[in-house]
Image 1 (cartoon, rainbow, N blue to C red):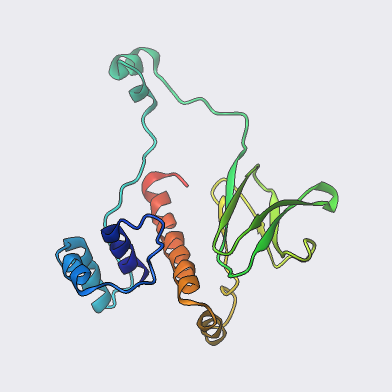
Image 2 (image 1 turned 90 degrees about the horizontal axis):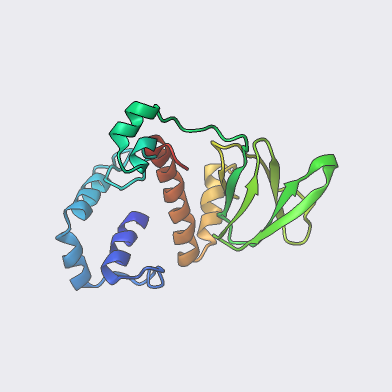
Length: 207
């Protein structure tokens, strides 16, 4: 449903997905059926394939010599190599898949917790950090109450807080039924993005 809605948003030029809960008109359905990639998606859904395949663009790290005017000559004469930075910091991003606003808290040295950001429902917040730093998600009324804890690394710098991931299937389904149509769409959209990010890292080597 989420992937189908992306095609509909593109057709409507709805960049902010403001019309995402509005069903497709007959005319829109006819236009979508003429899209080969959309038809391929429907065929995979109908076949109940475990994984949906498609095409996407990714940014690959360029060879360092290609950044210069005469890359082949320079590469041969200078044996260009990327320098290793002594600073190991990076940016971490935390995504809130909950219908509730939460706090992002950094677990500082000496057990001192420091407020980082409020994350709105289905929103995200970022912060600069270094390997091995730990954070937790807390309700808005008590920053010391850790709902979920995370330790970030350069390879795990995109963190998703999913309040339902540890629930048994029946309880998770019950919680999802409590969501509005828009909330459920946002939740499932984040799950799609989370799954895609794994394949993007493999293809591009970038978070």
